[in-house]
Image (tube, rainbow, N blue to C red; front, top):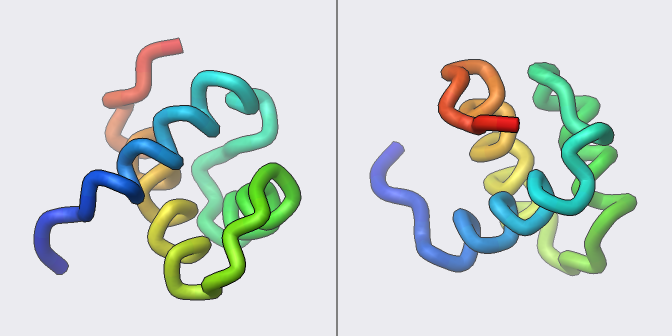
Length: 64
């Protein structure tokens, strides 16, 4: 898919810092959590943030 833009990484990192209990390793649940925790108007950006969070959790690169 390519390199993620910095703003996607920044949003995802801040969400994981402040709302880590809302996120799981399921992409569909993370989409709903991102929609509830932010006011991102774009569906594409919301999905990319949720995908980045899901990938971080599944690969174990997010340290709690």
